[in-house]
Amino acid sequence: MEILGAPYDLAGQRVVATASVGVVERPVPDGTPTELVKDADATLYWAKTDGRARWAFYDPERIASQMTRQVLATTMRPALERGEFVVEYQPLVGLQGGRAEAELLGVEALVRWQHPQFGKLSPDRFISIAEDTGAIVPLGRWVLETACAQASDWLERFPDSPLYVSVNLAARQFRDSDVVADVAEVLGTTGLPARLLQLELTESAFMAPAGRPLEGLHALAAMGVRIAIDDFGTGYSNLAYLSRLPVHVLKLAGSFVEGFHDTVAGGEAVDEQIVSALVQLAHTLGLTVTAEGVESELQAGLLRATGCDSAQGWHFGRASAPGEIDRLLERGA
Ligand code: C2E
Ligand code: MG
Ligand code: MG
Image (tube, rainbow, N blue to C red; front, side, top):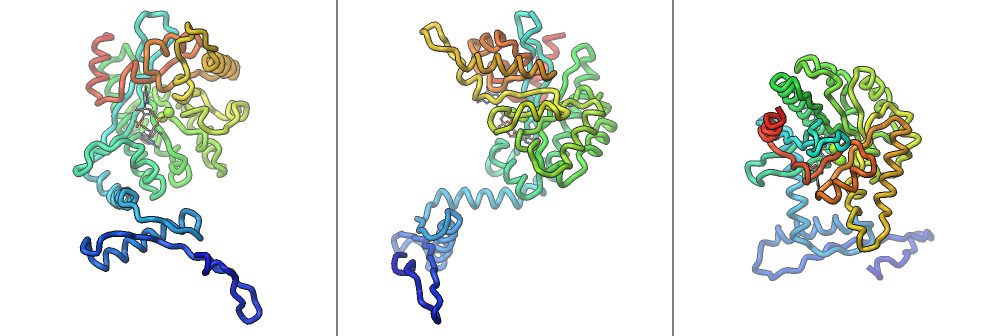
């Protein structure tokens, strides 16, 4: 690389060329020359994507994850048609109701891929792939339909405890499809009242440069659908700007609550103070606050003291099949 990196003199022009190198080291009897060259080529490609003018070593795990990604990307749409995706529901509970037990207010719909070969895949494994390939558009629409139909079914069977359903939307669904029309249609066909639907967008989706999401958000809010900012605090968005958008709910990222611990030992409760201030500010701006990632009784108690409206987390319940929510509703009734 040093030798190749030196400038060349080409017909009086000084030319600099760099090289990228892929290195595969393995015993000769293991595999064929074709495989070796193929792996070396893939490794060379990593050296390029990692920034060029460098060398990379072959890494079987990286190859495997790349292949899995490739396989998942190409099989996602047919898998959706074969019905391999399922939606699980995680409780969203009220904190300020004054009852000893947290009150079930709604559920977040979280998609999983029941893969025949790899088992149940979490969305972290395939949502970003779906966003890259565009499969998020049909997948997201399917989740919306499924979740609204489920919430409408709960409303019919438990009319005294109406649950809202919160559905995640990807920025690409605004860009590449008519989300507003889809939501209107799904509410119409499932019969779910708009006030029982909440849509979650991440900060980055709100900050997307295109003007489409903004118009769409206004149209959705006008329909009576609630809009939530998901994972607030993980990006760089500005609360003053966000409050001017048609947003109703702030979902605080789990990292805030993660810092809540016992301060009897004399530590400073900085994270609680930050959350208290955020909650006050959000309330001033007319937003309600849901905290994510509440895993313990202690965290739940400290959170309640900050004035936070509602919460979600393993302490209150994991994402589960709809039957689990049925049981909670039956118990509540
Ligand atoms: P999210 O929307 O922030 O969802 C919350 C995630 O936190 C879920 O992970 C949930 O299982 C997890 N979680 C809940 N309580 C706790 C807790 O107490 N502790 C910890 N450590 N984690 C907790 P999950 O189901 O793996 O989903 C990951 C992400 O995938 C979601 O984050 C969301 O961004 C995305 N996602 C899921 N379903 C969909 C979908 O239908 N469409 C789109 N666009 N994205 C989705
Ligand atoms: Mg979410
Ligand atoms: Mg979240």
